[in-house]
Amino acid sequence: MRIDEITLRRLSLPLIRPYQLSYRTFTEFEPIIVEVRDADGRIGWGEGHISPGSSTETREGGWQFTLEHAAQIIGRDTNTAKTMLDAAVPASKVAATALVTAIEMLEGNPLLEVEREAHLPLLTPFSSSHTVGEIENEVEARLADGFRTFKIKVGKDADADLRRVNTIQGAIDGRAKMRLDANRAYSERDACKFAQSLTPKGIELFEQPCGAEDWEANAAVARQSPVPLMLDEPICEISDIERAAGIKGVGFCKLKLKRFGGLDRLKVALERVRKLGMEPVLGDGLSSEIGCWMEACVAHHTIHNAGEFNGFLKPAPRLFENPLPFAQGTLSLPEHYIPRVDRAILAAHEIAKERFVRSTMGTRSA
Image (cartoon, rainbow, N blue to C red; front, side):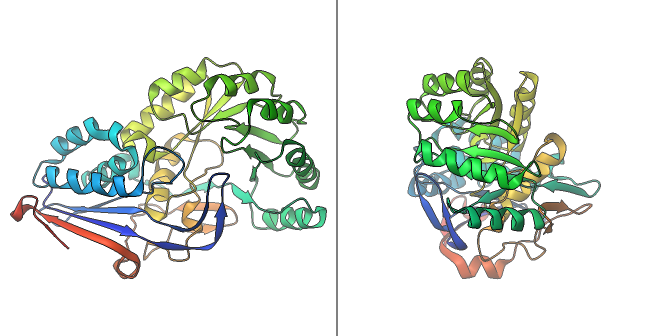
């Protein structure tokens, strides 16, 4: 199978409401969307959303990477193109993953096949502040919406965070699980103080308390936490998974498709997590519909807990003409579901576009 055409797009997708993390508040997602075609008209799609502040990758750098590598792989057979991109993954993981996954879809990767209808529970972010009434109202609303796993952001003030977590815990009263996520924001001292004071009931895990590269600080927290830690941002390679498995108290690894360079690579990494005695969590809350669909398909084959591939619910526009079905806290994959990308939505939200065709062997035209 040969790649005859590649179209690259940068989009700006406004969010329904601001999405706040410890390092950035998002009001729009700006993914790179990759479309590849072969001579028979088959199409593959890929997505890469670079999150400024989450890693050393930049949006401009990722865009330049896709331009350069699209020019190199146009006209190549898909196996050769993937080999070329595999070698380039370390240079720009997110952008490389967008290209590779588009090719994998073009090839009909079996991980994207849905042989029978699947229902995948998702977690929900929890936003209410420290007011007891607000918290109680949001808990009841989230439960009524069908969610049974809540993500609670912490990392600003250990004492205030603990009071808020205790209040949420009491309001939930065993009816849902909690995942606590510090987004790398705590110092080792504050993270240990916070973790030691937790009451474990209903808390599934404590995610990434300290800096991504500060393995020692995270290990110190893991040793003292009464709930298992989950590492997130440091988990980008099989070697990272193996390193995490050697830390007492780390029970989970969170993986994202965009960090592993493709669907097949992601599946291998998920299997490695479980083989080493930990539990994998999968999903990118910053992906739009293409990335979330792909992660959901992989989760259908490999994951046993609530998915974090809920980013598609955040932008106002949906990218698919046949949107991912979602109701009562659950994403559904209908039998033999194949998404149809809405080209009108793409055109309405494009901020850049480049096209490569085999006949010009790498010459670009917008």
